[in-house]
Image (cartoon, rainbow, N blue to C red; front, top):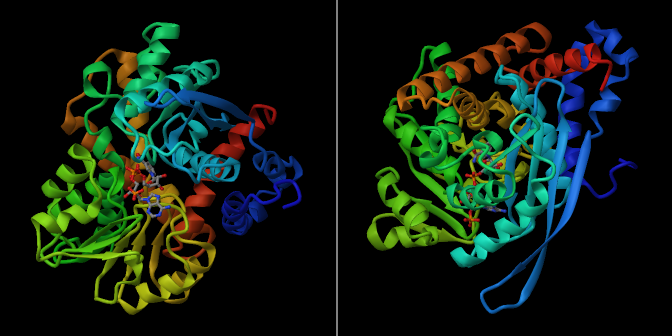
Amino acid sequence: ESKNPGQSEFLQAIHEFLPTIAPYLDKHPELIASNVLELLLEPERLIQFRIPWQDDNGNWQVNRGFRVQYNSAIGPYKGGMRFHPTVNESVMKFLSFEQIFKNSLTGLPIGGGKGGSDFDPKGKSDAEIMRFCQSLMTELQKYIGPSMDVPAGDIGVGGREIGYLFGQYKRLNGHQGGVLTGKPLTYWGSLARTEATGYGVVYFVKHLLQDKGDSFSEKRVMVSGSGNVAIYAIQKAQALGAKVISCSDSSGYLIDPDGIDVALLKEIKEVKRERLSAYIISKPTATYIPGESVWSYEGEYDIALPCATQNEINQELAKALVKSGVKIVAEGANMPSDLEAVVVYEENQIIYCPGKAANAGGVAVSALEMAQNSQRVPWTFEKVDNELNDIMKQIYETCRDTAARYAQKDDLLSGANIAGFAKVADAMVSQGLV
Ligand code: NDP
């Protein structure tokens, strides 16, 4: 705490992580002796820079840019870029710390990183977004590369932003397809990358349900958020027979008792870039509740998929989930449940699927995009989607089996942390703790 004053999100991620790996360390005293934990709490490199850009009125604006290159033990740094006013050093460090173990769980050779800016893309013109992205990349390009550090999208960074970032990188360094992932399909993007995180979280739950002789069929599902992860989680859950009754944005939440109309949602969010409240204009039987958390909803449902942002579920909202009859919480977002919410899940035998396992599908397909870029060969949608499904099955089984071995049945948080950590710690020690 004294080394990271005021960095509440980063400290929260560490507090969640450390106790869960204790049973593994008990069996591996050599890791304590080598001090690998202390090294792991310190990022390899943290880059912070100024991003000057000109708005449409000709005024100069300035934002703060970050890239945290946290851990390269098992591969080049890999993790998204986030554009949101809440971005700061603490948020960047928590996200990149989580990313280490998530990337390790995918079984693919990628290390942990994350970046972004406190720039708010809401209400900006395309030209402003472009000038901002170009200015950001003018600095960031010094530190990244296809075998060094490969950024992707996150909150506020989708295909449009990746395109502008890629264009500026190319202008300065020539065409290097593998420097970013989440690229549009016309220049080395991967089919199924857009869908990957949302589909992946649903595949994770599908395998969990199958393991218990159950399925998504007839399940009532609540989703928060209405961005990239939420949209494709809704789409896949409905394709597997569930009814998804909600989604949300930072202004409020939507309940559609008929099940969310994904085509309408995509039109509003991806094409028109409007607010979610526009949904009820086309679908008056749905209700939009402004200013409230979707998790305060009092109706009944079976599965919760938080897909918006960190700490969206606190103790009080977790208790509301319990009252609604939820059996499974699977995180599409990173750390959407705070520490006290996780305790409420444990006390009420809710199966908790932490983000670092359940939302790893996005980065996994990003790594498959890197593989396609290296091969110079694009894969079909079906091939990528099948690989994604297999990877999510393997992640679920790894978490399940590791939990059974070191913690308790269905303690997928411990399973994810231990399995993710074991590989990284081993690689760090064998490389001489570099
Ligand atoms: P998007 O920007 O596409 O969507 C974010 C959604 O969450 C929007 O509906 C947004 O509402 C809402 N939201 C964001 N911040 C807040 C807030 N402070 N309070 C309430 N609502 C908020 O982002 P993604 O869908 O890509 O990311 C969502 C989550 O998933 C993040 O935690 C991200 O780190 C995680 N994730 C994303 C991956 C990916 O591949 N994209 C991979 C793995 C994890 P509004 O429009 O009003 O801001």
